Amino acid sequence: MDRRSAQMAAMCAAVTWALQGWLPARWALLGSVLVMLRVDFMSYWVDSYWGGAVAATGGALVLGALPRLIKRPTVLNSLWMGIGAALLANSRPVEGLLFCLPVAGLLGVQMFSAARTHLRRKAATVVVPAALILACTAAFMGYYNWRITGNARLFPHVLYQRLYWNSPVFIWQSSKFAHVYDNPQFAEFFGDWNPPEYPPSLWVRMSLSKCRDAWNFFLGPVYSLPFLMLPWLILDRRIRFLLLQLVWCGAWLLTVVWFSPHYAAPLTATLFILLTQGVRHLRHWNLKGFRAGVFASRLILVLALARAVSPGSEIVHRPLRGWNLQRAQIAQQLQRLPEKSLVIVRYTPNHNANHEWVYNAADIDGSKVVWARDIPGRDLHPLLDYYRDRRVWVVEADATPPRLEPYAAAPASAASK
Image (tube, rainbow, N blue to C red; front, side):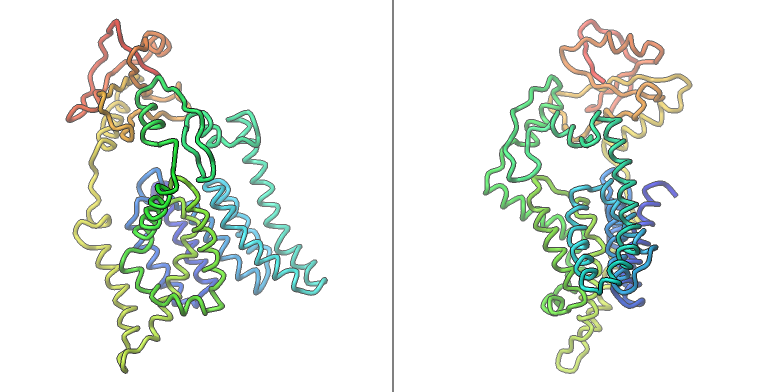
């Protein structure tokens, strides 16, 4: 089992545990099957860099510990909540904080509504274990930040935003002073593909696009059927908190300029608990004596299974194609060579900036293959001198198919790492 598959397996287990904390066991089983069919088998989380499994696992652990701590506080459940919050802090810090705030508020209300003697016992059982986990997490993250950025409070991604991005992160922020990039691909990606200004009319269209993308990823037409029971869900006191949490986090996600479904990963357990509870309400729907709700609930599962195993689905047929596969094939070819390699990647002027070939491991100098980008007007000799012990190759990335050729020294060539 590779790392990504292990993350998805942990996510499914954590979401099942969260479902068991909010719903009866047989309904939790149904919800876990729906999660597995929709998010595990059928999503890009399982086989891409842009995965949401870690954040979804963290959100599920926090959410699953909540009803258990309210009903019967134990140190173990507090530790699970702390671990879940730690996973959120290290995967999606902002979204994780917004996700945990309502949980902390509800726990605080439940604790302070108890007698003083119960309050002390609950504080020792509920607060202290989770607080210890979070303190260790904060210390680790501070050390990590210090080693990378030189400042324990400066996150690497924040530094990256400051150094390269022109566009704001949140809609209320103003655009930055435009950066000047010597690299054509950087100029296209950070200057053209990410515009610096977002007028209100564009924000409205982007918000609708975010809602559509989230709906397509998590629900789609089949999984939307249980939400026909939304009026009953609103009146259901057992899961009303989850609805409020979903609205709270969803509203904040609309304030972020860019969005992908994995940004909402902490809400995975929340959404599927609501979905499963919607199926429970749906089963009670009768239409002139016909048990239409029972038929509809079974139809949902049948359609979900049919979509998963249908020809062309990601389970049955997940084709490998495109520039990323071609890069992987060339990388494997170079890894099999006995000597180390330096690969100079050349793009045409109309290159798609999102089809990037230059990715290196954290230890660049220790890597078997080092990738570098050819930049017009830059001299390659300093780079070649630095890696003089490597065999040098050139990849014509935009050729059809891409070509790997031995490097031939030219007087006017440039590259950067």
